[in-house]
Image (cartoon, rainbow, N blue to C red; front, side, top):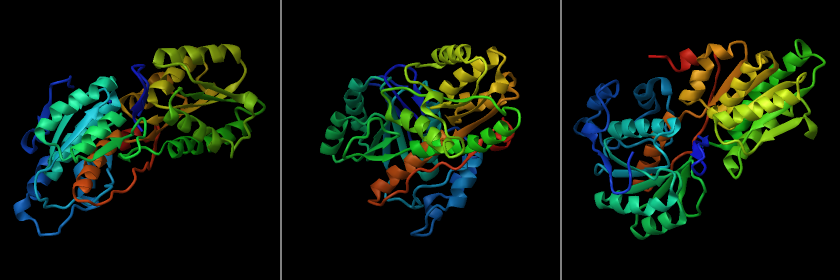
Length: 369
C-alpha cells in the first residue's frame, strides 16, 4: 500500500490542481523507449480476435519492475477507453511512480489515461472530478475514494476503483498492498537473522522490537504489528520489550524518536520495522549517528526511491537491512489492468507482493540504469 494520511508526509505506500487536467492519449502518454517496439508489434490491426496479452509479454514490457498482471487484457478492445485517476499527492515518490506506470500501461494497452491531484485535500475531489468528467471517463480511480466521490461517480454510471484506498468505502472496487502480509514478510525476513545473532554476536543481550508506525492509520498498524506477530514465532517478545512510535510523522521526527530510544537503552539491541521507507530511514539514520549500526537489524515496506537509496547508502553499511518490495510501479500498472477489466465486466486478481530486496540484491533487482 502506498496510502498517506492527512498532510503529514506519511507515505504508507508518490500535478495538477483543481480545474487543470492532464490528458494522455496513446501517442503522448510516455516517451519512446523499451515500450515502443512492443506497442508497435501489438497494433490492433495485426491482432487475432480474442487474443489477450500474456504474462510473458507484460514481463517483457515492464523489465526490472517484473509486473505480474492481475488481468489478461484483450489485445483488441472495442474502443480506447478513458481511465481517470485522482492522485493524493503527486510529489510523493511512491505516487509519482504510480503515474509513470499508469502512463506506460495505458500506452501499452492502447487506452487513454487522465489524472488529477487533490494535493492531500479530500474536499477538492469533487471539483477535480467535475473537470475530469468533461472527458467522459469510463472508469475512475482514487486513493481517497470518499463517499461523496462514490455517490457522484455512481450517479454517472462510472465505476470507482481505489488504489491502496484510505479509507475503504463500501461500494468501491479496490486494489492494493495486503498490509498484514507485507508486515509479516518483513518479520519473516528478519526472524532468522535475529535468531542467528542471538546465538552469536548478540548472545546474552536484551532485544527490543522497535516499530515505526502512525495513528490513526489502519494500514500502518497492520504492517508494524504484522511484523511483530511474525517475529514472535522466532523470539517471544514480551510487552516490555516492544516500543512502537505512533506519533512521529516524517523522517526527522522518526530519527528523533529513535535517538531518544537509543539514549534510554544504551546496552540493548533492536529489531526495527518501518511502516514505509521514509519512517525506517529515519531510524537507520539515528543508529548510524549514534555509532550503533551493529545494534540493529531492520526492514521497511515499500522499496520506493528512498528505500532503494538506503540499501545503497554507505552510511548504513554493516546493517542487516531489507525492504519488502511493494513495487509501486506494478501497483500503478495493475490498476490500469483492473480498470480495463471493469470496462469488460470481468474480475481482476488481488495485488500480491513477492520479494524482499537487500543491499546484496538491490542492483540486480533494480539496476541503476
